Amino acid sequence: MGLALAMQGVALVGVFGVIKAFAGAPEGGPAWAWPVLLFSWLLAWWSVTSITSCEKHEPSQAVSLLIPVLFGIWLLMLWEALVTGLKIPPVLLPAPSAIGVKIIGNIPTLWADFQQTFMKSVLAGYFLGCSIGFAVALLADRVPFLKRGLLPVGNFVSALPIVGVAPIMVMWFGFDWPSKAAVVVIMTFFPMLVNTVAGLEAAGRMERDLMRTYAATHSQSLLKLRLPAAMPFIFNALKINSTLALIGAIVAEFFGTPIVGMGFRISTEVGRMSIDMVWAEIAVAALAGSLFYGLVGAAERAVTFWHPSQRRT
Image 1: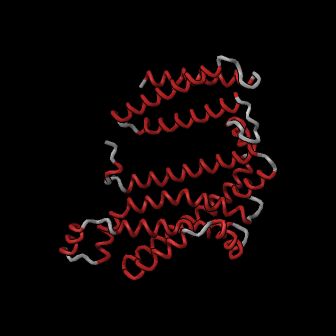
Image 2: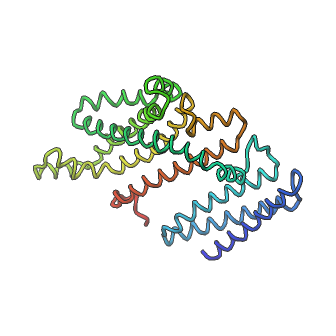
């Protein structure tokens, strides 16, 4: 582990030197820069692979977190080096450093867009859509007719194109965040419905027979057996919906919104050829979506600690 981390440091120094050489040289850079970049990348790859091997033999939460962090850092470093070395125009692909400068210089704007899109549209639509999907799944499990009738209808609704649904929601609920939340509800309802229905059927026949032997009522069997068995399925839907909700809210803002929001900013700045601001919004959205997904994953580990998928060894 210590050798692998030392090699990471050596590789980082090499790439920083290459980026600095690229920045002060014409297109193509000095002849030695590209071999050094390739060697540094291979060295970083080897060291991350070594850390991964150590994590397999000695599982650790810190090492599990370190691996994706290092991988992300190296993707950004390679991106910076290629954009700088090949002199790619910023209008086509800005460097990560330029995107970072744009984020720091526009924090109030980005925060206002984040509040409008994520704190209002995404969270409201996510919790409402997941709650309705869960409640309908419980009802469908109780009434077989609804199970057979609702799933095809839900499949039909989930197949509706968002670019067709979003303008309709804007006409119904106005230009503010409720129309975007309505789009999110439509996108998150069906995954929760399908996964919850499937999860409620996951309990084994022997366990169900045992509950009947104990003369358990439907609600007792549901609370003590079937819902716990369905939790991995339910959290799978929650994780899927955590990304679908953000995508749906941003795309819905392309079709009508107040002068604030991630989707509004992206569409506006593309028209102004301010691509670094577009990437700044994308970075904020990616970070928010990743943290949201991580929170759902942490809740899943706390609730379904007994499931084999949560075992580290």
